[in-house]
Image (cartoon, rainbow over all chains, first blue to last red; front, side):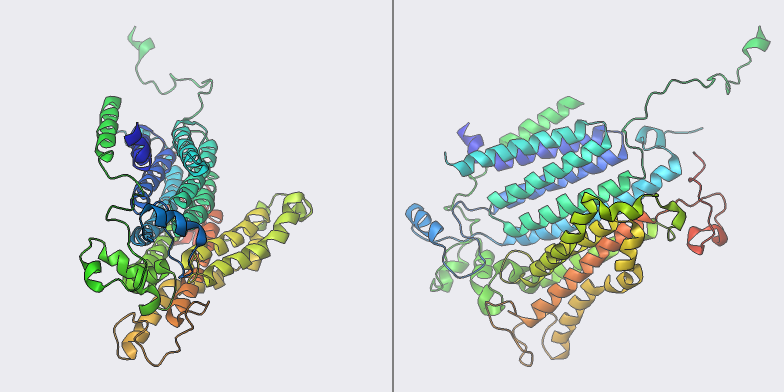
Length: 129
Length: 104
Length: 282
């Protein structure tokens, strides 16, 4: 239990990934599949941001020293530690790509309903003749 | 166990519950609203994990733009996931081409 | 079938529990010591030397005190150039699918003129200027605080969309016409490439920031921290705002077009299309 509690962000990210994957595979409405795709993508971003976290770390935005963090962190490690900025930059681009994919897919869903009259994938991909 | 760890665990439980509720609900408008709750909880989780840039982006994009686009698309497609089971008063045998009466 | 998902979940949880605990400062992914007098040899021996360099060199090699903005727009600026191009391409793709013509006046509900006297209308009329101001605040403060071009651009676009959503689409079209939006859409990639080409023209590399000698570099630590970064953020901010508004206008004015007669005279963009629902399956 202590192992799960110390890695709880990774475990929750994996659970959300499975939920999104279940919705993507097993639900027949195309709109519901898009919602599940979004849940899938944001779970991966949670995993990645949890990799770059430092408890009692300092967020790097200025050289001014924060008095609240300094004493606790110095007591724990003996030095001041800053948070890694690399995952933040990668995830910013990923979030932008996610919203672009959603915007384009939704326009395709609207046109799909107008062409087929239904949003059920079983009926759309049914073999005819 | 200070307040930060307790709130962190509670927000993660809220994430899982809202993700399950999004997938399960049959009314698509309900699913979109619960999805915006999910996105907002994810933004708070990013803030607890010390990335304010990503938290601001996820809050603006997920709870703002993504929900808006979902609702704008939802105004043009049917609102319920499966078609309602109406009472079928139309003759199902109208297009039935088997000659039941002529063959007997 | 569901059994496979449970097996996948259990295996992945067992794998993920083997990772080091979250937030442990004695494990390599942290970005290290703060003091500027750590010798260079000790930095390059660690496995996360790049993160360490971004933290220490943010204010020295690029003007802005925020390591994240300096990393996105200066050290890894090539990625952000193509990210703005991706946003622009998504807008082109979404708008080319949503074909439509301007709505006729007879699509109005009869009460649309009275919205400004309800609770929602009064509150929104007072709030939208503050939303625009907050969006501009986030864009301009991208160098010293969390924020930046994309976040501020999304807030700016959301304020215009909110106005067009509550009052009718025609009111929003009067305040923010789509003919002006068509020019501002391209401002994101354009401004980024323009700033990059300035570096080429003056004799240095593409997207050079602090090595250029002839350009006024700002005062570090203030809002005007670095001239190329400020121009890039303004371009991205206004570009993303207008892209979001234009895509929303595309969803509103979208009309189904028929596939029975695909000749150019019956497409709705010519103004004389039939307004029936789509293809052969309806």
